Length: 265
Image: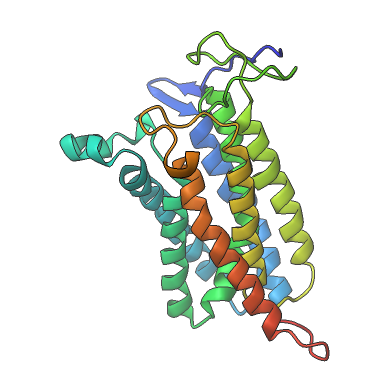
């Protein structure tokens, strides 16, 4: 067993203002993701000004926050919020869903693509390469907070998380950080080095995330109020299955558009 390093969830205290690690990870995502977005724009030779790109970032930020919050309410705890609607505003108590955030980002990307006259698939390709960076930092934030831990394990790297009982558990946050964060980021950056058929990078992102989430959820503790659902799958796994189907469909569509004689775009 490895001792869990007890972190202070507050990274910086400025008088009455507390800057938490999880919020700091969100901020770092947009700070570090900005040059990655600019690299994508240059690589694809897209006519998007820095001002327009900043508009996209703000739209995505709004989509992540609203989509993530309402996705959690809809998918994970609808009845509780139905009986206490004011709790929806208590975002500091946690409760965000990646799948809801993804829907919010898709809507933001669709609005932006229509506004600037670009293909929706091209805009989503820009965002797909950056998203694993946010997933990596977000999962590190989960680990620092000591939340979303794994199921009990007898493996030597099991950890006893505060509030999770006396049994060592999988550090599933780190598994997810490695798979949907580091590994997926490397794959997408490698794919993004050269022009590819529109939709391929987006399809690889959806497929890669879905496979990572499906795998890790087998060792991640299910939500206490939901438990295992049909087929002994978690809510996260059921929400990832449509992503897998759509991702594979996008890959097939993109590969069908590429020809041996023409550089793929």
